[in-house]
Length: 438
Image 1 (cartoon, rainbow, N blue to C red):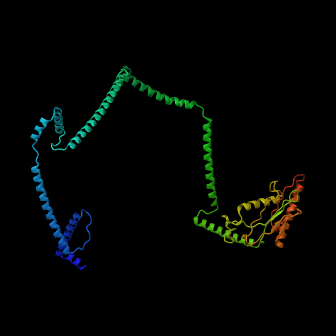
Image 2 (image 1 turned 90 degrees about the horizontal axis):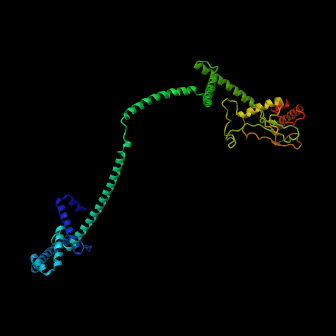
């Protein structure tokens, strides 16, 4: 490491190292040349071996130079001893020895060499290659001449065809009359006059043509659709305006009135909840199909609040949701059926179709409760067709359902008396325990 550092720092040592590297490169080239490109055997590389190899390489180079010089001298001496006679002498010998055909062939060969621009001392192979090249060029020239001949022939045919067309167009049939400009001006004037007449005739035709009924129907349908849309918009606007009826024009006073209405609503809601808390756990409806023939099943269904989505799967995890008007958790369809059932009970008429033997009735809204807070009583049909059998119910519930059943039987009897001779229809009784007892 220290020696390499010295070479990097000292310029003289760097030059020595560079010279040694060049010497080793010369020695490696010498050994590779002697071994004919093969890898020389490995040996130790030091200064003594380097000096010995350099001396050996120098001696070999000098020996090679001397041997090359000797060979050159010997070659030149041999050429001097075996020199051929001059060309003139050979030409004279050939002319005396060749026949007439041979002399003609020699003349042709000489002309070919001159035409092909070949050197006089060239090889016969060069003359053959030049001859083949000349043949190739001749073939290409013949092909080009054939293509040009075909193109000339095509041009001649096209020229003949165009000349025939020109003769046809030069006929008197295609010549215009001398008065063509005057006729053109006259036709243009007539065209303008006819255009004006077309507008006048269209107005007359429109005035004389009767109105189509189909067009009137289409227009009437369009006006009807537009009127219906306007009516719908008018209803929507009136509905929005009815919401603000009775409110003061001042914004602050209107807000106070809205807050007062909200307080009144909360008060009424609390009162309703207090009244619901005083009701019994089950407040059901009684459904009776009467005592007529064919009405063999009597059901008493307890009315429970309809649970919301997810309340059945996870009981007690969600409170009953109130609607926008805060009327309680009973759905609107149950309230509609309840009002229908009340009017039917007051009139003592059947509220179902004659094909049905039972009718489901609903009572007034009760306090919200979960399905797992109370278990409904078990209901079984009676074997005597006189009433239901209520199982697993407390005495208060049994008394409530019994009173409702008696009221249903009385209503059915009255309906049968009024409709004597006709098939009795199922009677509908609505109400809770208090109404059934009364």
